[in-house]
Each structure stands twice: as structure tokens, then as C-alpha cells.
Length: 340
Image (cartoon, rainbow, N blue to C red; front, top):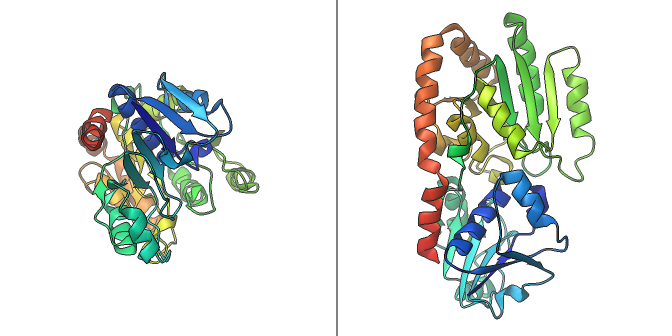
């Protein structure tokens, strides 16, 4: 059996690519030979290194011909509906697209060839179903929760996510500005910002370094899976400002669609304090497994509360870890295998 994989964003090595890796693993486990469309033959090695997985049984080809001649095809949409030709076609939306004129007659005809439309969160589903007139299935991304373990905790706050201020706004600049105020009260803490660097994003990391001058703020570009595990393991808190300043109803593509690194942090008992927009609202139960915030003042206040109340930190960290197990790789494999 042969499966074809298409993801136009593979080299960004972000959450959507972790999803694709989970799909590849699912096909391999079911006995498929997997073929990925990409020009750079080293992409599989890059995916394995970034996500700490083995993808033996995967080949890179120049063109999968939209699944023609394959038993199954998994295709990540760029907002359009492709004409797929495999025996079983699965279309995945990782972005809550809007204003694509998705209900055209041509799109409806193309959808006849698609067995399943899959999305990564209820947040994404809300927009996709309305935009394209479909009934998509939510399968949350696979998270290697067993790989992320708490280590001897240090006074570290971290964020893991692409250094991006383009389509999806991660807003590390907001975290830097809040940490500066936090540091005035907590001189023995530091902030670490880690993530891949988005091509065409100018000198965003350079501007962050300039903003962080004079403070214990570290910027870690393109970290390995091992480095991310170590960082989350020693961190006490995980801050995220993704989507800050965005109206999620008007521009849903600019907020976090799910939040894989949020779950990874929770697994490592790094308590998440996450901006209250998009997918993370489905992950965190506010006040139990983490905290949601709307304003910078709220983030600062809730972070300080954790510093001042060790019992609260312990209780929240424990609940956070337990919640993370709901998003395990095995849960993903079980659900996706049913589609195959």
C-alpha cells in the first residue's frame, strides 16, 4: 500500500509539520509505504531532528501527482480545495481560513473526491465548516507528552514558538515588555524565547534582542528537540502572547490554532499563562491546569501570584501535567488510524 503526503509548509518545522509527522507515522504503522512531495531530499532528516522521531519507510519525491496511483493521500490545504485522485483522500486544514469563497460549485465537486476533512481544533472547525460548507472532524495534534519531563526547576520563564510577526503573530515582543516589569520585582528570574526563524520575516529576532538589552533575556534560534525538552523541563512558567492585539473573529488565522508547545510545557510542569484566544482555550482550564490572560497587567499579576504562592504553583503544575496526557501521540494514532 502507498500513501502520498503533501504539506506546502514542511520547512517551517512548526505545529502543522508536527501534525504531518504524526500522519506519516500512522500510515507507516498501518503498513503503508509513504511518499512525501518536496524538493529538498533532506527534509525527512530535518523533521526527524526537530521532532525527535524516526520516519523510516518514508521517501521524498518531486511530485505525488495529487495522489494519482496511491491508495491514500493526505493533503494540507493552503486555503484552496485540490482535485485529489487517490483511492482515499484526506484533506486537512491547519489554518481557520476565511473569505476564500469556499462554497463555489467547483469546490463542491472537488469535495466529492475527499473522504474526510480534518482540522486541528474546535476553533479551526468553527471557521472551516462555515467557510466551505463541510462537517469536518477534529483530531487534535499528536504531542510527545512522555518525552517532556520536569527536571530540577529553575527560575525560568520560557516561550517556544516561531519567531514570526507575519501571518501568525507570536508576539514575543509583548512577553519581553511584560518580563521587564516582572524582573523589577523578581531579580533572580530569566526569560528564554526559543523557536525557528521564519523566512522573509526581516530582522525580527534582532529587534527582540534590541528590546531585551540589559535584561536576563535569552533568544534561542532553531533549537533541537533535545534543547526544547531541556528548556521546558527546567522552566517554571510558560508564557504565550500569540495573537495579542488581534480580533480572532475577524482574523482567526493570526491567533494560535491549537498550541502544541503549550501541551509540551504542561507535560513538563511548566505552568502555562497563555493569551486567551484561539485553540489554547480548549487546552487549559483556567485556574486549574493553567491561566488565561487578556491584558499585560493580567499576565503580570497572575505570574506574580505563582511566584508568591508555592502551594498554588505545585497544585497547578500537577493538574497541568495530568491534563497534557489527554493530547498524547497514542490518542492521535488511534483516532487517525480509524480514518485510514
